[in-house]
Structure formats: structure tokens, C-alpha cells
Length: 493
Image (cartoon, rainbow, N blue to C red; front, top):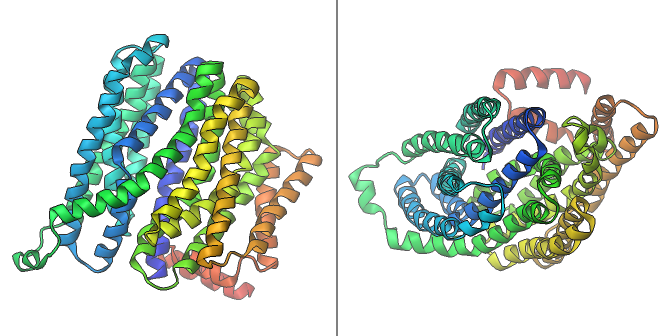
């Protein structure tokens, strides 16, 4: 496996996720100034509900499909890839129908809220378009040619922000905002991804087609078995991640829901680095036979190197971060601090879960997700009525820690080596520097930048970040830029 191809694939996915994070941050920053926290809380419930129902609709297909397509694309077998994509779309159609029926028959749930009846139709369309986009994205990711993903994301993000601002200024409610923020960009992305997928699965010659021994029935069975094995953990994970927003809405109202939702989105944005690495690593892990554990460890290490310095610095400036949205959101600073502590255990558990799934050890993958999400789900109903948004954050953290504990047990069985000393140093250094900046009452922007920069300098000095890591990082850049940086670093060395 070419490290440069793998690295560039991860970079494009990371850029895509960063665009999503920045556009989301800009959107919510604008919305908090233009509208009430009640409307933001209501929209966050729609987002959380549709995310859960999308997880139902996709039946675990994206990861299952990547596991097979990663191998077929690597071995240059487009005919087999085409069969598996067709089978996945067929299964997805059934999943969308099931989720849509739930929205239709559960319409009575909207009677006790400020949502209008038109929201049901919008939610059904959101589920269908989001599910299709998710599946087609997995096809593109499996090819490792992910250059188009950030471009598509930039286009869809621009459309949703501009359209949403116009509609909010016109005084529209949550239904119209859900249409502009969720439905329109999903449809646009699905169309563009469909065009790319068709190009990836170009018709092969009749001779090659006749040599294809895989049939639609077998492909459907393979995808369904792998999908169901991943579907239940994915559904449990999504419920554990999104249900807190819905429970807070039920017990505490839309204003507190908006605060918790924004804190959760900040943590989600930080976790995008690990998400991009794990996303590109799954088809890679599935297509290689040797060094899987080594590659899995590298994804965990790089995820920690990217996410922990930032998250540790934000812990001590959480109040300043929440104040950017407005004074009504400052009381969410404690919730944000708790959620930030969940990033490191989530990264480790996610990397190990990714590895065992690539082996086809679905039971172990399920155990990790189950240990993370079931306690979260149960504790939401216990702690949120007592502690409010802080109770939701505590529930979230406990789930991450339990998943870490289960992951440690699993790696002891599969004999995977984790350099705990390195992870401890990656966490301790930025935490200590961030605490010092806070004690010295340094401006939060300066304090965060100083914490991140000094952390990376010390990690270089302590050989946690190695020269080989810098070479790998530079090689994923365009040749002209990477050559100039390499010459500069050689002079320093």
C-alpha cells in the first residue's frame, strides 16, 4: 500500500471534514445572532432524530461496502465493484422505506412540540438523501481517490449557509430551516457523488464481464451480513451520540438543548481528524494482509497528535469559546470541558474497533460500540433530569471510558502493541501548558495558539514526533510544496 496515496486520501477526507466543521461553526455563529436559542434547539432535535433514522436506513452498508470495495479497487476489479454497489443500493432502498414509515407513523410525537405537520415530509426526504449521500461517499472513499470530496463539501456547505441565512431573515421556522440546512445540500452532494461513482464503475469489456464469478445474490448476502454486523453497533453508537440532545429537549427545553448541541458539535469537529484517518484506513486495512496492527496504531497515534493538543487547550478556555455564540450559551462551558475529556478514549476505542472490523471480527467491534453507547443511553435518562446539560456530558464521558476499558481487553487478546507512554505524553504536555496559560490569564486566542505550538515543539524534542513522521506528512502535499519544505528541513537538520 502506497503511503503517499493513503496519506493524500486521508488529507482530502480531513479537508472535507474541516470544511464541514468550519461551515457548521460559521452557520451556528450566524444563527445564534439572527435567531433565538429556542429555534436552534428545535433544529438540533431534528438533526439528532434524522441522524438516528439515517443509521437505521443505511443498515451498516457504508463500512461493509468499503470492506469489499477496498479490495476490489486495489485489485482493479471494476465488474465486482459494480455488482456490490448495485446490491448496496437495493438494500438501502429497503432501509429508507423502513425509516420513512417510522417517521410517518410516529407523527403523533410532533403533536406535543412546536413542529408542524410538514416537517414529517421534510424529514423523510432528509433521511433518503442523507442515506444515499453516505453510501455513495463510501464508494469514493474505497477507491482512495478522494480529491473530489472536499470540493463537493465546499459547494454544498456554501449553498446551505447562504440559503439558510436568507430564509431566517425572512422569518421562517424550523421546517423551512431544516429544508435549507439539511435537505438541499444532501441532494446536491448525492447528485455529484452519483456522477463520480458512475465514472469509477465504468462499463467493462464483455470478456471481463463474463469472467466475473460474483453474482448479485451473493453480493447482497455478503453486504447484508457485514452490514448487519456493523449496523447494530452503528445504530447503538448513533443513539448514544445523538440521544442526549433529544432527552435534554424533553426534560429541559429547547434553550438548554441548543447549548448542549453546540458543545457537542465543537467536540465532534475536533474528532474529525480521527474520523478522516479511520475512514480511509478501513478499506486500506481490509485490502492488506500484513502490518494491519501497525497501521491501526499509526492511525491512533496520528489522531491523538492532531486532536489532543487542541482539545487540551480548549478545556481551560471553554467559557471564552462558548461566549462567542452569545452570553446565553456561556453556562455550557462546564459541559464542554467534560466532553473534551472524552476525546482521547474515543480515539483509542475507535482505532481498535476499526482494526477488528477489518479482520471481520464483528463481535469484538460490536462489544466496543455496545460498551460505549449503552451506558450513555441509560445514563442520559438518569443524569439529565438531575444535572441538565452537564448530566448529558457526564453520560457521554462515561461511555467513552467504558469503551476504552473494553478496547484494552481486546488488544490484550489480539496482541496489539499500544505505546501508552507516547499517548500519555501527548495528553500531559498540552494540558500542563494550557493550565499555565490559564493561570497567567493569557488571552484565550493567544493561549490556545501558544499551547498548540509549544506542544508540537516539545513532542519533536521528546521524539514522540519523529523525522519520519514529518517526511510522511510532507509527502502527502503537492510535489512543488513538499520539495521546498524538504529542502528547508534538511538545512535545519
